[in-house]
Length: 298
Ligand code: GRG
Image (cartoon, rainbow, N blue to C red; front, side, top):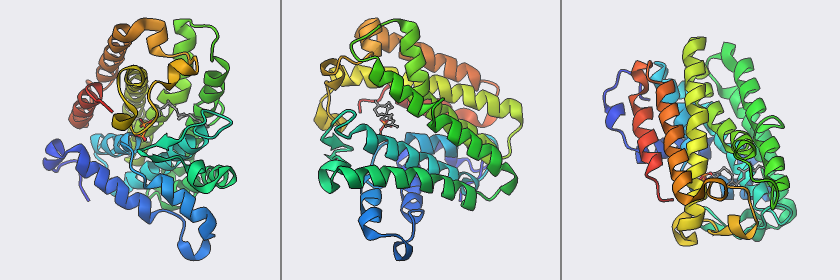
């Protein structure tokens, strides 16, 4: 395990952080002996399918920034990635975005059928809370962490954002409505990631609040870049279908601001993110991560 005083943290690349997360995700799937294989297999298919693992990496880095250890943050990191993965499985269903490609592979329902994909998503969502509540070492922080995760994933967070996103197709294009959707659909999980990392380390409220604010602005920047990449990149590079937002008449940053304006908005949000953590001495890796995410091509 790495602790915050280890100077190699500064130079550790995203690949190493990803490898830590990958190993833990596999380990924290429900056990094969007590889980129906017809359910475990589609859960595992999407969970270990790759992906950038940005949200769990944010949990780890926020925890380290507060002086915490990786083992304190890993249950929350895995729980968050399980919830994110469930959301992707359900988002790809025919009733929602009806997509064939995710993380460079056929979508869950294309491989296992719609019913199994719905159940795999349901099971990942529920199992996430079991992992968080059972495995988090700082037992006193668990109630607060469960609340953070539930709030970010539910009707006042990601699911609420998805509902507004679907309802906005072909409708009103105001910047205010766009921000409302992006805050819920994307930034809520990013803010939860950094808050959970802080809580896992037992951080003071002011530090946890600053990290949460960082996560929210980073999430808004991330979504603006995501909208640009949907226009400018290809399905091969992204590992998911490019150009879909326009075909589905989605309300995106590029619709509201244009491509250049969306990049400017991403830069503005990333500056706000960095401002939020400027007083946290251990946050230099989050500064590096912010810069890398602004330059991402996939
Ligand atoms: C179906 C409840 C429900 C929610 C769906 C996450 C989501 C809400 C929909 C997916 C579509 C989308 C564009 C969401 C915005 C958040 C986002 C950019 C997701 C993709 O996250 P990445 O790029 O994906 O981190 P990987 O595959 O790298 O993990």
